[in-house]
Amino acid sequence: MTDTRITRRFAALADEGRPAFVTFVMAGDPDPATALAILKALPKAGADVIEVGMPFSDPMADGPAIQASGLRALKAGQTLQATLDMVRAFRLDDDVTPIVLMGYYNPIYSFGPDAFVAAARGAGVDGLIVVDLPPEADDELCLPALAGGLNFIRLATPTTDDKRLPAVLANTSGFVYYVSIAGVTGTAAPDTGRVASAVARIKRHTALPVVVGFGVKTADQAAMIGRTADGVVVGSALVEAIRASLDKDNRATEATVASVAALAGDIASGVRRAKVGALA
Image (cartoon, rainbow, N blue to C red; front, side):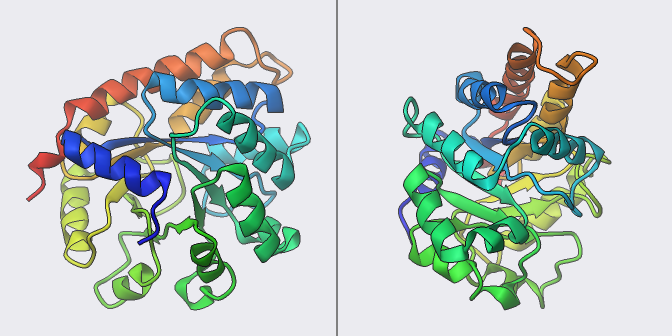
Protein backbone atom coordinates (compact mmCIF):
# COMPACT_ATOMS: atom_id res chain seq x y z
CA MET A 1 0.00 0.00 0.00
CA THR A 2 1.29 3.45 -0.90
CA ASP A 3 2.44 5.41 2.14
CA THR A 4 0.72 8.79 1.98
CA ARG A 5 -0.44 11.48 4.36
CA ILE A 6 -3.84 9.79 4.17
CA THR A 7 -2.66 6.36 5.29
CA ARG A 8 -0.51 7.91 8.03
CA ARG A 9 -3.37 10.06 9.33
CA PHE A 10 -5.84 7.17 9.52
CA ALA A 11 -3.23 4.97 11.23
CA ALA A 12 -2.62 7.71 13.81
CA LEU A 13 -6.36 8.16 14.42
CA ALA A 14 -6.83 4.41 14.81
CA ASP A 15 -4.18 4.52 17.51
CA GLU A 16 -6.12 7.34 19.18
CA GLY A 17 -9.32 5.32 18.91
CA ARG A 18 -11.38 7.97 17.17
CA PRO A 19 -12.78 8.62 13.70
CA ALA A 20 -11.49 11.21 11.26
CA PHE A 21 -13.25 14.50 10.69
CA VAL A 22 -13.18 14.97 6.92
CA THR A 23 -14.20 18.38 5.58
CA PHE A 24 -15.15 19.39 2.04
CA VAL A 25 -14.83 22.87 0.59
CA MET A 26 -14.85 24.08 -3.00
CA ALA A 27 -11.62 25.49 -4.42
CA GLY A 28 -12.03 29.16 -5.28
CA ASP A 29 -15.29 29.74 -3.39
CA PRO A 30 -16.16 32.57 -3.02
CA ASP A 31 -12.83 33.84 -4.40
CA PRO A 32 -9.30 32.40 -4.53
CA ALA A 33 -7.87 34.34 -1.59
CA THR A 34 -10.77 33.60 0.75
CA ALA A 35 -10.83 29.95 -0.30
CA LEU A 36 -7.17 29.60 0.62
CA ALA A 37 -7.79 31.29 3.98
CA ILE A 38 -10.63 28.84 4.67
CA LEU A 39 -8.42 25.92 3.68
CA LYS A 40 -5.72 27.06 6.09
CA ALA A 41 -8.28 27.54 8.89
CA LEU A 42 -9.78 24.04 8.70
CA PRO A 43 -6.97 22.02 10.34
CA LYS A 44 -6.90 24.49 13.25
CA ALA A 45 -10.67 24.00 13.57
CA GLY A 46 -10.23 20.23 13.86
CA ALA A 47 -10.25 18.87 10.30
CA ASP A 48 -8.19 15.69 9.99
CA VAL A 49 -8.53 15.30 6.21
CA ILE A 50 -9.65 17.95 3.71
CA GLU A 51 -11.46 17.26 0.46
CA VAL A 52 -11.13 20.11 -2.02
CA GLY A 53 -13.72 20.34 -4.76
CA MET A 54 -12.60 20.93 -8.33
CA PRO A 55 -15.25 23.28 -9.78
CA PHE A 56 -17.09 21.92 -12.80
CA SER A 57 -19.97 23.31 -14.81
CA ASP A 58 -22.05 20.10 -14.77
CA PRO A 59 -21.75 18.63 -11.24
CA MET A 60 -24.34 15.86 -11.56
CA ALA A 61 -23.80 14.27 -8.11
CA ASP A 62 -23.90 17.51 -6.17
CA GLY A 63 -26.86 19.06 -4.43
CA PRO A 64 -27.89 22.71 -4.64
CA ALA A 65 -25.41 24.03 -2.05
CA ILE A 66 -22.31 22.52 -3.64
CA GLN A 67 -23.54 23.28 -7.16
CA ALA A 68 -23.89 26.94 -6.18
CA SER A 69 -20.45 26.83 -4.57
CA GLY A 70 -18.88 25.54 -7.78
CA LEU A 71 -20.61 28.19 -9.84
CA ARG A 72 -19.37 30.94 -7.51
CA ALA A 73 -15.84 29.58 -7.88
CA LEU A 74 -16.04 29.38 -11.67
CA LYS A 75 -17.42 32.92 -11.82
CA ALA A 76 -14.44 34.04 -9.72
CA GLY A 77 -12.12 32.53 -12.33
CA GLN A 78 -11.15 29.28 -10.63
CA THR A 79 -9.44 26.73 -12.90
CA LEU A 80 -7.94 23.31 -12.30
CA GLN A 81 -4.45 24.82 -12.40
CA ALA A 82 -5.53 27.44 -9.86
CA THR A 83 -6.81 24.63 -7.63
CA LEU A 84 -3.43 22.90 -7.77
CA ASP A 85 -1.76 26.24 -7.02
CA MET A 86 -4.03 26.66 -3.98
CA VAL A 87 -2.93 23.28 -2.61
CA ARG A 88 0.70 24.22 -3.23
CA ALA A 89 0.18 27.46 -1.26
CA PHE A 90 -1.48 25.53 1.58
CA ARG A 91 1.53 23.21 1.74
CA LEU A 92 3.85 26.11 2.51
CA ASP A 93 2.42 26.14 6.05
CA ASP A 94 1.01 22.62 6.45
CA ASP A 95 2.86 19.51 5.31
CA VAL A 96 0.84 16.98 7.31
CA THR A 97 -2.90 17.45 6.68
CA PRO A 98 -4.06 15.13 3.88
CA ILE A 99 -5.62 16.83 0.85
CA VAL A 100 -7.98 14.96 -1.48
CA LEU A 101 -9.19 16.54 -4.71
CA MET A 102 -12.80 15.64 -5.46
CA GLY A 103 -14.73 16.22 -8.64
CA TYR A 104 -15.36 15.06 -12.18
CA TYR A 105 -13.20 13.66 -14.93
CA ASN A 106 -13.82 16.20 -17.69
CA PRO A 107 -11.46 18.93 -16.38
CA ILE A 108 -8.78 16.30 -15.68
CA TYR A 109 -9.18 14.84 -19.17
CA SER A 110 -8.78 18.32 -20.64
CA PHE A 111 -5.69 18.92 -18.49
CA GLY A 112 -4.22 15.56 -19.54
CA PRO A 113 -4.44 12.65 -17.05
CA ASP A 114 -0.70 11.94 -16.86
CA ALA A 115 0.17 15.62 -16.62
CA PHE A 116 -2.52 16.06 -13.96
CA VAL A 117 -1.24 13.20 -11.80
CA ALA A 118 2.29 14.63 -11.92
CA ALA A 119 1.08 18.17 -11.21
CA ALA A 120 -1.19 17.04 -8.37
CA ARG A 121 1.57 15.07 -6.70
CA GLY A 122 3.97 17.98 -7.13
CA ALA A 123 1.48 20.41 -5.57
CA GLY A 124 1.06 18.24 -2.48
CA VAL A 125 -2.19 16.42 -3.26
CA ASP A 126 -2.54 13.02 -1.57
CA GLY A 127 -5.62 11.47 -3.13
CA LEU A 128 -8.36 11.75 -5.73
CA ILE A 129 -12.11 11.15 -5.74
CA VAL A 130 -13.48 11.27 -9.28
CA VAL A 131 -17.17 10.53 -9.00
CA ASP A 132 -17.94 9.79 -12.66
CA LEU A 133 -15.15 7.27 -13.36
CA PRO A 134 -16.37 3.70 -12.74
CA PRO A 135 -13.99 0.80 -12.02
CA GLU A 136 -14.28 -0.27 -15.66
CA ALA A 137 -12.37 2.90 -16.58
CA ASP A 138 -9.48 2.38 -14.15
CA ASP A 139 -6.95 2.63 -16.98
CA GLU A 140 -8.04 6.25 -17.58
CA LEU A 141 -6.90 7.72 -14.27
CA CYS A 142 -7.06 5.33 -11.32
CA LEU A 143 -4.09 3.16 -12.23
CA PRO A 144 -1.91 6.09 -13.37
CA ALA A 145 -2.76 7.88 -10.10
CA LEU A 146 -1.80 4.87 -8.02
CA ALA A 147 1.43 4.49 -9.98
CA GLY A 148 2.12 8.18 -9.38
CA GLY A 149 1.82 7.83 -5.61
CA LEU A 150 -1.71 9.16 -5.14
CA ASN A 151 -4.50 7.35 -3.33
CA PHE A 152 -7.56 6.74 -5.49
CA ILE A 153 -10.68 6.78 -3.34
CA ARG A 154 -13.86 5.17 -4.56
CA LEU A 155 -17.45 5.79 -3.60
CA ALA A 156 -19.74 3.01 -2.40
CA THR A 157 -23.47 3.71 -2.17
CA PRO A 158 -26.59 2.12 -0.69
CA THR A 159 -27.10 0.41 -4.07
CA THR A 160 -23.58 -1.09 -4.20
CA ASP A 161 -24.39 -4.75 -3.49
CA ASP A 162 -22.02 -7.57 -2.57
CA LYS A 163 -21.67 -8.56 -6.21
CA ARG A 164 -20.55 -5.07 -7.24
CA LEU A 165 -18.48 -4.21 -4.16
CA PRO A 166 -15.32 -6.19 -5.07
CA ALA A 167 -15.03 -4.26 -8.35
CA VAL A 168 -15.46 -0.97 -6.52
CA LEU A 169 -12.78 -1.91 -3.99
CA ALA A 170 -10.29 -3.52 -6.39
CA ASN A 171 -8.01 -0.51 -6.91
CA THR A 172 -9.29 1.70 -4.11
CA SER A 173 -6.71 3.01 -1.66
CA GLY A 174 -6.53 5.46 1.23
CA PHE A 175 -10.11 4.98 2.34
CA VAL A 176 -13.54 4.04 1.05
CA TYR A 177 -16.14 6.81 0.90
CA TYR A 178 -19.60 5.49 1.75
CA VAL A 179 -22.39 7.68 0.41
CA SER A 180 -24.97 7.41 3.18
CA ILE A 181 -28.02 8.39 1.13
CA ALA A 182 -29.27 7.72 -2.37
CA GLY A 183 -29.30 10.96 -4.36
CA VAL A 184 -27.24 14.12 -4.43
CA THR A 185 -25.21 15.78 -1.70
CA GLY A 186 -26.72 17.66 1.20
CA THR A 187 -30.38 16.92 0.56
CA ALA A 188 -31.31 14.47 3.34
CA ALA A 189 -30.11 13.24 6.71
CA PRO A 190 -28.51 9.79 6.94
CA ASP A 191 -30.20 6.91 8.77
CA THR A 192 -27.57 5.98 11.35
CA GLY A 193 -28.81 2.41 11.74
CA ARG A 194 -28.60 1.71 8.03
CA VAL A 195 -25.23 3.42 7.85
CA ALA A 196 -23.85 1.22 10.62
CA SER A 197 -25.00 -1.92 8.80
CA ALA A 198 -23.54 -0.69 5.52
CA VAL A 199 -20.18 0.16 7.10
CA ALA A 200 -20.00 -3.28 8.71
CA ARG A 201 -20.80 -4.93 5.37
CA ILE A 202 -18.10 -2.98 3.52
CA LYS A 203 -15.57 -3.81 6.24
CA ARG A 204 -16.17 -7.49 5.60
CA HIS A 205 -14.70 -6.88 2.14
CA THR A 206 -11.79 -4.55 2.91
CA ALA A 207 -9.30 -3.50 5.57
CA LEU A 208 -9.42 0.10 4.35
CA PRO A 209 -10.96 2.79 6.57
CA VAL A 210 -14.59 3.52 5.71
CA VAL A 211 -15.72 7.13 5.93
CA VAL A 212 -19.32 8.27 5.63
CA GLY A 213 -20.59 11.40 3.95
CA PHE A 214 -23.60 13.08 2.29
CA GLY A 215 -26.11 14.66 4.64
CA VAL A 216 -24.10 15.06 7.86
CA LYS A 217 -24.69 18.62 9.07
CA THR A 218 -24.50 18.71 12.88
CA ALA A 219 -22.17 17.69 15.69
CA ASP A 220 -24.74 15.20 16.99
CA GLN A 221 -25.12 13.54 13.58
CA ALA A 222 -21.35 13.37 13.25
CA ALA A 223 -21.03 11.77 16.68
CA MET A 224 -23.64 9.14 15.81
CA ILE A 225 -22.03 8.29 12.46
CA GLY A 226 -18.56 8.30 13.99
CA ARG A 227 -19.46 5.52 16.40
CA THR A 228 -19.41 3.00 13.59
CA ALA A 229 -17.38 4.65 10.82
CA ASP A 230 -13.67 5.44 10.57
CA GLY A 231 -14.44 8.96 9.43
CA VAL A 232 -17.25 11.45 8.94
CA VAL A 233 -17.42 13.81 5.94
CA VAL A 234 -19.10 17.20 6.19
CA GLY A 235 -19.38 19.30 3.04
CA SER A 236 -22.72 20.90 2.24
CA ALA A 237 -23.08 22.41 5.71
CA LEU A 238 -19.68 24.12 5.44
CA VAL A 239 -20.37 25.31 1.92
CA GLU A 240 -23.72 26.67 3.08
CA ALA A 241 -21.95 28.52 5.90
CA ILE A 242 -19.81 30.21 3.26
CA ARG A 243 -22.88 31.24 1.27
CA ALA A 244 -24.66 32.57 4.34
CA SER A 245 -21.69 34.80 5.17
CA LEU A 246 -21.48 36.51 1.77
CA ASP A 247 -22.81 39.96 0.93
CA LYS A 248 -25.60 40.58 -1.57
CA ASP A 249 -23.11 40.38 -4.45
CA ASN A 250 -21.77 37.00 -3.26
CA ARG A 251 -18.53 38.55 -2.07
CA ALA A 252 -16.70 37.47 1.06
CA THR A 253 -17.19 39.45 4.26
CA GLU A 254 -15.20 39.68 7.49
CA ALA A 255 -17.39 36.85 8.82
CA THR A 256 -16.73 34.34 6.03
CA VAL A 257 -13.62 32.51 7.22
CA ALA A 258 -14.57 32.73 10.89
CA SER A 259 -18.07 31.35 10.37
CA VAL A 260 -16.81 28.32 8.44
CA ALA A 261 -14.11 27.66 11.02
CA ALA A 262 -16.62 27.97 13.86
CA LEU A 263 -18.98 25.43 12.30
CA ALA A 264 -16.11 23.07 11.55
CA GLY A 265 -14.94 23.36 15.14
CA ASP A 266 -18.40 22.57 16.46
CA ILE A 267 -18.79 19.48 14.27
CA ALA A 268 -15.23 18.39 15.07
CA SER A 269 -16.23 18.27 18.73
CA GLY A 270 -19.02 15.87 17.80
CA VAL A 271 -16.67 13.64 15.85
CA ARG A 272 -14.32 13.53 18.82
CA ARG A 273 -17.14 12.32 21.06
CA ALA A 274 -17.31 9.18 18.95
CA LYS A 275 -15.02 6.21 19.37
CA VAL A 276 -13.95 3.91 16.55
CA GLY A 277 -13.49 1.30 19.25
CA ALA A 278 -17.27 0.85 19.16
CA LEU A 279 -16.88 -0.97 15.84
CA ALA A 280 -17.69 -4.65 16.02
